[in-house]
Length: 294
Image (cartoon, rainbow, N blue to C red; front, side, top):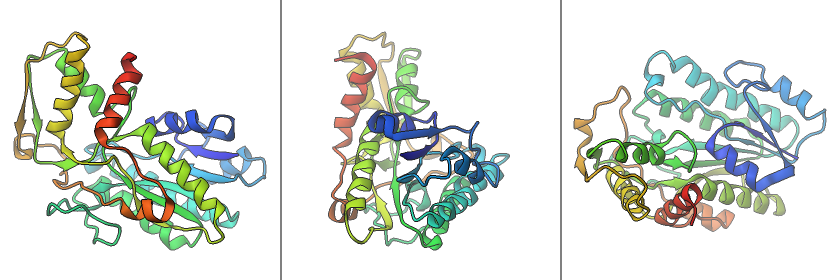
């Protein structure tokens, strides 16, 4: 059995589909990461039998809210709860698979960031995720920590579905074009993460560590929006929009600062764990087919 925390998220949905009966999905009603001591419930849920592994797909992801009233909850869920979960897994000698974000970097430069590059979050959300990363590494148990970027699927509240809604409502849109990264289709990320876990469990020395794992290639939010727009127009799916104009980040101010460079070098995951994701455009096509059919 594998315990999966984060029952209702887009990544959890993908994990559930992959793992089937081997997964025990745990929602906030059973183990609330916003409250210290939640691992006591994991002990009850597992019936005293250590699971094969734990996957933490739960997170506080309201980036702008974390700048204000949500900061304490973000630090608890993304930081302190990860430390508690890591200790619970260490005591049972089971691996913890956890997800983090490109937002732990400051977004400077243009080169893809690797796992050794210096972190310097520019917002509270990134800071909370970095606390979780550090806590996991310092605990000393078995773990796989995956930093990823721009995750979406066909059903969740995300950029993909927001653009689909807006192009059906507005004649033209403006989307930021100077933030560059890799859109990551949740089912692709889930499949690679599970494969990595399975591969790691077969080797004599568990390859604990930090790995980057996201869609292949790169684009801007504007490029991603235009790709969604182009696919939607081929389906005649009630598109009202005529064009999507590029704008700089300065013309779309938000409470939380966003990194301009979200490129991640994923070579380490491929070399050590034997996993990589397809190009982001492949993921987008599959997502569109999942939503509307082939």
